[in-house]
Length: 543
Image 1 (cartoon, rainbow, N blue to C red):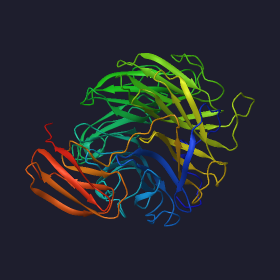
Image 2 (image 1 turned 180 degrees about the vertical axis):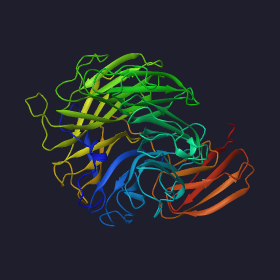
Image 3 (image 1 turned 60 degrees about the vertical axis):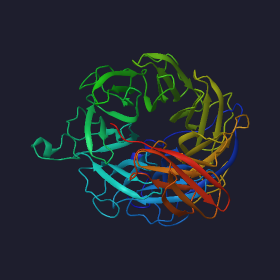
Image 4 (image 1 turned 135 degrees about the vertical axis):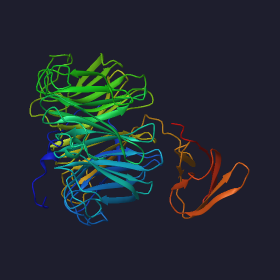
């Protein structure tokens, strides 16, 4: 891809349409920031970190320009930006080969690091350490708490693989959720070894493909699900029984190993697996139009939430009709997939939901983007093409407030996150010049993050020192809740014997407990500001 090449089709599919909405109890904008170089950056995921900050994940076409400090390796590269609670840089990293590397998902790992997951068509070279299998492959990179690479894996077949989501699992491994057009690996078909090749033949032109990895990135099992047409897996979650829920969209009829009919152009399709990846049940939800699922999660009450967008009227098993165009569509189903309730949310002419979170009180935060209305409406129209949209609901999906944020151009929200300080982070891509709610800008397209503050929401008290994870098997990260210039970290056992002592300058302090026995340890932090200590439990992996 050349710098002046049109916007990539694989990206455009998720970036089409959207803007506007009226607001109830509109939230104040505390700050907004743009991250990127002089060309183009596309954000696809963001996650909160235990130190009150956030990690942003996407891809970059820019060279070392703007506030991007690392040069590009080739076409699109993986680009991650770790920021503090004020949006200021902690660190950033770029990974890529000579081709296009599209980072779709980032998650925290139980050792305090991060797992990056996306799609690559790059051969071996630059930061890519393994050759590809086909047109595009799954590409996974494991980072430590400071962004240093620990290992990477390329996984795929002879065709196209599209990795959308990665899920850290309770055994320390990972579930990869995406789609594949590849047949079974030629080496495996011939009885040869192929440890990272596709082991099952597909059913249509694109199938769900779930791959389970161990903690070192080795494949434990993989499964293919699909019908005769296109089945796109976009989201997954590990369930409380140790199994998995896979969610995406399908236009396949009853065929392959898809056992339920299609209601319209495309439907939500969810699959429940046990811990070994074996099918337990599957369900289809939709109407006569186009229904695209983007996010699944298991709610606090044990049931499942399914979120996406719908262009269907009240047909099929959809009983909440959309407005004009495409609307947010949210369902709650029980542990057998039976519908408990469903809601639609009509914001603009074309509304695309991309994000779903549940709060500790059971309330829900929906995020996406919406296109302004072209016709008369009770809602207040905003100027621009696409806007960020955040909707807060109660535990039954009843709307509490809606907030619209945007510039004069295209603003594509990917993640809405409720923060520990009583606010909200909206993270995505802005293609508009500074205007309206946007005052910053680096290049043609930037990562754009907006911080909202809810005046009615109680701010969580920040602890002076915390440790995450705790208990831990190996690493823990001591999180210092205040600014300081210099300090030291000291690790003691319960007898008072000093085991480690080292200087610190950062508020996140990785501590390696992998070489000490099971038990309780004291980590003391002394800075030029104050002294604190935290107890950390070193556990043993009994799985």
